[in-house]
Length: 291
Image 1 (tube, rainbow, N blue to C red):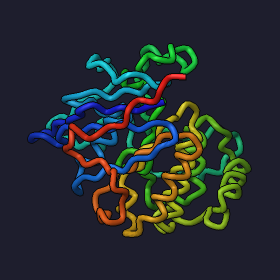
Image 2: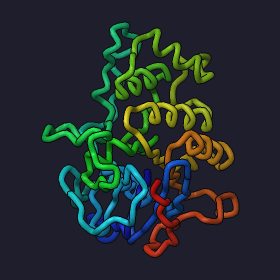
Image 3: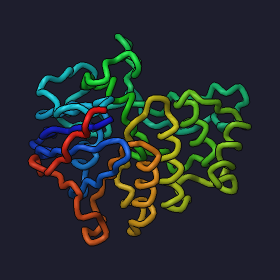
């Protein structure tokens, strides 16, 4: 599997928000994307996930290694930035909820995930074909289909949990979003399995940065069909890069493709082959040979 962004550029309400940028990442790999602080780096991540339609270029997911994509793209289901809107307002069909009236401990497993945005769109229409129904060499470019395969982790205003929510509520919402059991017992079991049971009632904003990113990444990876993880600026929570670099590597070793967006991490602490926003000619790896 490969995620290929070819000269992706995004326009904001007052001009270019993201200059043309290219990258390729395959299953079992992780790549670091470095940009300036602000909304641009997040907008690029949302474009990678089919959540924001680029003004230029294409984003495609190849379920099997293939040649570089054509310039054809299905634009249905994505949104352009409108004057006065920021990238966090665009892609979802709802804002993160306030958690009122929901202690996350229901035993019926239904969970209220209406306050979280799964990126797959909620306005009806034809659903994308199942992964197994699509020819192996057919690039996926329809935004909703891309969104089923690419999960954005901890993106401000999009998938970032509310600070005041206790951890067990956040886990319950994410499990429900993934279509997994989300009752009290399931939440407790998940927290125990991820060495976080002691923090079940801790406000999310008080979690250690590495623990926060680790848990949110694991929850995103549990969604059915997700092949790519996009971690949105874990460096905004800590100046230490070791934890999230190790996390990206671990998930890549499990077979996912991982993109980490950064803005404040020092270049010296990052891999030499990082992708820089505004580099449309970034040296992309050759597509893997077909088996």
